[in-house]
Each structure stands twice: as C-alpha cells, then as structure tokens.
Image 1 (cartoon, rainbow, N blue to C red):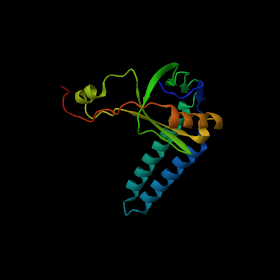
Image 2 (image 1 turned 120 degrees about the horizontal axis):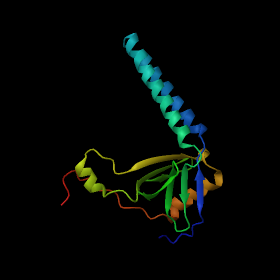
Image 3 (image 1 turned 90 degrees about the horizontal axis):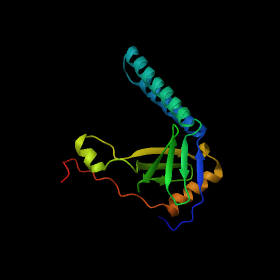
Image 4 (image 1 turned 180 degrees about the vertical axis):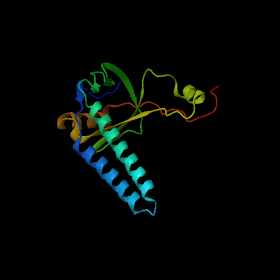
Length: 169
C-alpha cells in the first residue's frame, strides 16, 4: 500500500495521432534507406513490402487496443489493473517504468503470474515483463496527469525479475 491518497481512475484508450505519425515516419525512413542502398530492385521491393505490412499490422493492433472495454484501472487502494477483452489483470509495475511529458512507458508483469526466475529457467529466452506505451493524446488530459502523479508519488514498484538462466535452487 502506498501513502498516496488515490481516487479511482479509469483510463479508456483512444487512437493516438502522435503515435500513428511516428510509426508512419519511421516506416517511410526505413523504405527510403532501403531504396538508397545498392541492392537489386527485387530486394528493395521485398523490403518495402515487409516494412509496409509490418506498419499496417502495428496500426491495426493499436486500433484493436483502443476497443471499448480495454484500458487501465486504478482502484482506491492504489492497485493498477489492465482491462482487455472483458478481463481484468492486476499489474505489478517495475522500476524501469517511465513517466514523461509526452508519453508514459509502463514496464509491468502480471501479479498472478508464476515466479519469473522459475519460468525463465524452463523456457529461455523469456521476458519477465511486458511493456505498454501510453501517449499523452491517447487518454484525456486530466486522466493522463493523474496517472503521471500516481507513477511519480504513489506507486510501490515490484522487485525486478532475476536474470539468472540456470535452474533455480
């Protein structure tokens, strides 16, 4: 529990124009680099198709993440929950999370997940955390400010997962 007085907060995501523009800019720069290399026409076309299809896939995933019922929820006790597909999963935030003026980068793991050190030993490589990027224009201004204040003053971070790759004792 934190000493920070938390009012319940519900963040419903909407598509971010800044993120979409950044994705398109990066894809355009990648395609331009491909065409400036001294490769054959077919290699440049294939690379451009891969970059274009990957950009379309990422934009569709972003749109699906903004569907009704998906988002973050902060309860009165200071626990952070992620809502997706009608299910709510409690999150443990990691200290590597970042809160900035234009975006928030949440590094988290599910609170109910198995012990990361045991799972990492069984199936390497395994990432002990997930990442969620929240742009400032993908939620309301007041909710974004409250999330940043919570991350700055009210959160107690989980201990980072062990990076041991040997079998646990």
